[in-house]
Amino acid sequence: MTKLFITFLTAIFLGIVCTGCSVNPVTGENQFLLVSPEDEKQMGEEYSKEVEKELGQSVNDVQIQNYINSIGQKIARICHSPEVGFSYKAIDHNSVNAFALPGGYIYITTGLLKELGAESQLAGILAHETAHVTARHIAQQITRDYLIGIGFTVASYKVSSGALRVADIVRQLESMSFSRSEERQADTIGMDYMVKAGYTPYGMVETMEILQKQDESRTIEFFSTHPSPENRIGYLKEHIFNNRYPNTGTVGKEEYASNITERLKLIKPPPKDKNSQ
Ligand SMILES: [Zn+2]
Image 1: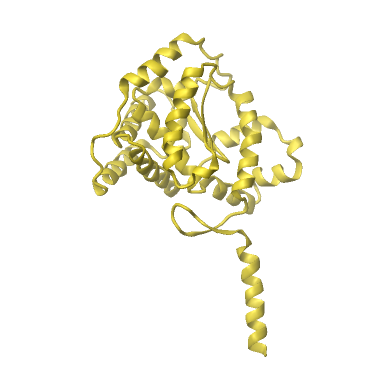
Image 2 (image 1 turned 60 degrees about the vertical axis):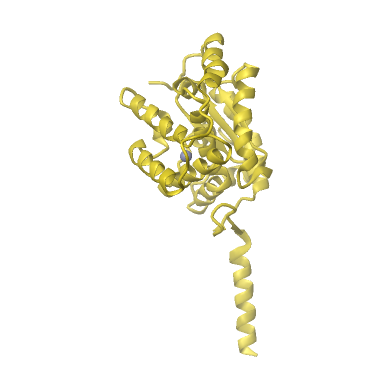
């Protein structure tokens, strides 16, 4: 009887502890998360409007937006969670950055687009951000913040979304920092995605090399929230070697030049960034 009672209590306890448990679609591991994919979508919907308002409007050029979204969709189609409903947008901002909001809203700045020179490099950035979403890193980050009591996201969103200070939210979303192992995971999973979508994996390595060079002369925002490029280049090359990824696949230099580089010259430069040093 007592034994049965203990079993009963244990079952209840496990039931409580595991209400937030879910299986990570990428790693297959159990995760404790306080936000569901539906919660994330709702947050992303709300925050994406604020991000565009705060950081500058999305780039007003149909060709640029369509091109970026079409490359993003090639990755979204073959990723672990296509049902998220990803969107990929260019945002008019001088910083060199890319980031993902909850719910699959992915942004890349015109500052970063200007540094790149091939479709495969752009695919590398978009695939990295997509992997942060599919591996539920954003949900994990929100859960972590919430559990240690400094989280704005779930707490404030659920309690008083109207009272949120927009500028603070945007700053936090933009600089959402993941752990080193999460970044590494986003790099390697992202590389798997881009190869599966038909791109050469070297596009991602080149992106790191380009940004590393730039970072010597000025601070690159992408690196303030990401690990330094040196060891990333190392393990990315290792990942190519271990998976025997061929050096074939789309590079797309001309496509990138005509759809991005040339188009960016035609649109008016973004207003001076008020936060730039
Ligand atoms: Zn990242």
